[in-house]
Every structure is written in structure tokens, then in C-alpha cells.
Length: 72
Image (cartoon, rainbow, N blue to C red; front, top):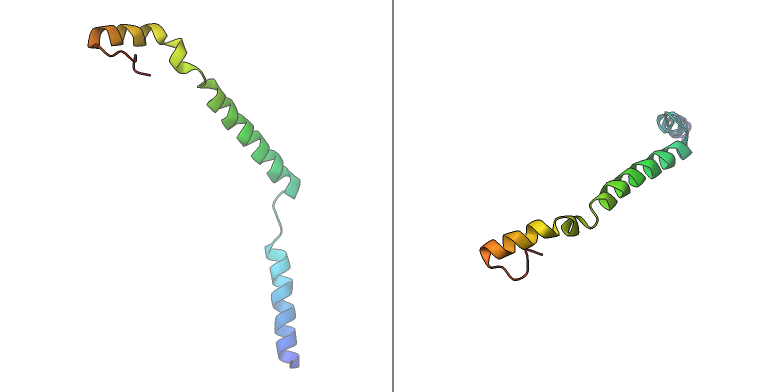
């Protein structure tokens, strides 16, 4: 390896190190992901058992339209 190639390689590695700096600590990204997934989990859990909340409406619809399954 020539001296010029070694100098260019060192320059590239030096610039690469500075390009990889994160704006915040790395563990904060994990905390942000945890909060986002928890919020999305709460949204998904809030839709749980929605069909049973409207069982009377489904039964009335089934009676009007002759559907024996009630739409579920």
C-alpha cells in the first residue's frame, strides 16, 4: 500500500466516524420505540371485544335482513 492510499484510507475512516454520530444517546432510541409500541398496543387493545359491545345492533340487523349469524 502506498503512502497516498494509506492517507486516503485514514481520511475516509476519520470522516466515517464523524458521520456516524447520533444526535441523541443510543438507548433513547430504544426508549422511544418502547413508548411508540406501547401506545400502538394500547390502541389495538382498545378495539378488543368491539363486536360484543354492539351485539344488540347486530341482532336487530340480523332480524331485519334474515341473517342467522348476526353479521359476526
